[in-house]
Amino acid sequence: MINIIRRVSLVASLVFMPVLALSAHAQSNFQITPPPIAAPDFEAGKVDDKVGLTYISMSGQGMSLTGFGADFIRRKAITDAFAWDWQAGMFKLDGKLSGKNMSLFSLPLSLNIEYQPLKTPTSSAILFAGGNYSMSSVTVDKAVLYIGGTYWDLNLDIITHGWQIGGQYTAQLSDFKLSPFVMIQSESGTVKTSYGALNQGSSSIPTFTTTSYGLDLLYIPWNVTLSSVLQEAAKSGSNSSVKTTLFTLNYTF
Image 1 (cartoon, one colour):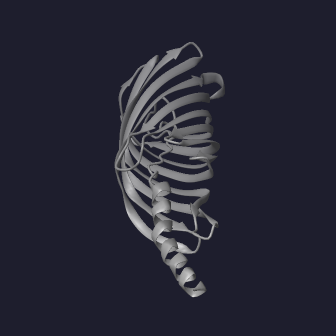
Image 2 (cartoon, rainbow, N blue to C red):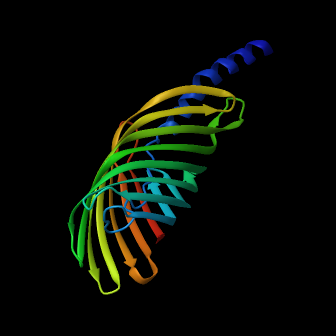
C-alpha cells in the first residue's frame, strides 16, 4: 500500500510541477536600454566615450523590481554626417513576482550607425539605427511547489536580439544642452527554463516592441549629463507589458 502511494505521488509531481513552473515562466520580455547617444553632436574623426550609472524601476503584472547598473558608449565619427557607436551595460534588479522574491541580471549590447542631418552652434539632430543583443538571468525564489511540500527556485536564462531605430534633437540653452529622444526596438529570442534538478528546455519568446522616450540634460562645463528614460515593452504572447523607468548620471570624455 505504501509503495502504491509513493508511485501515485511521483506521477502527480511529474504532472503538476511543470504546470506550476510554466505559469511563472510566462514573463520573459525584459528589456533594459540606457540612453543611446554618447554626445549631442559630432564631427569627422571625433571619438566620444560616455560612462553612466543608472537607477532602474521596473513593473509588470504582479511584478515590481528596482536596482542599479552601469553602461559604456563609444562613438567614432567617420565624417561630419556619419558615425558608428557601440554600447554595453550591466544591470542588477531585485523585487517581487507574485509575492515571491525575484532577481534579474541583464547584459545589453548594441551597435548603431548614426546620421547627423543638422548641426549649428545652437542645435543639432541625430538619427540612428542598428542591432541589439541582450543576455538576462532571472531567479524566482521558491516558485515551484513539489508534491511533497518542497519549494524549488525557478531559473530563466533569456536571450533576446533584434533591431532598433530612433532620433535625438538637441537645443543649447546657455551652459546647458537639452536633448529629447525617442527609440523603438523590436525583439525576439529564446528562454531556457529550469527548476530544482529539472531542465525544462528552451522555448521561443514572441516578437515584442519596446518604445523609449527620454530626455538628456547636459551641463557643458562639466560634461555631465542627467538622463531620464521611460520604456514600455509591449505585451506579446503570454507576456504582459513591462514598464521601466531609468535615471542615469553620465560623464562624457
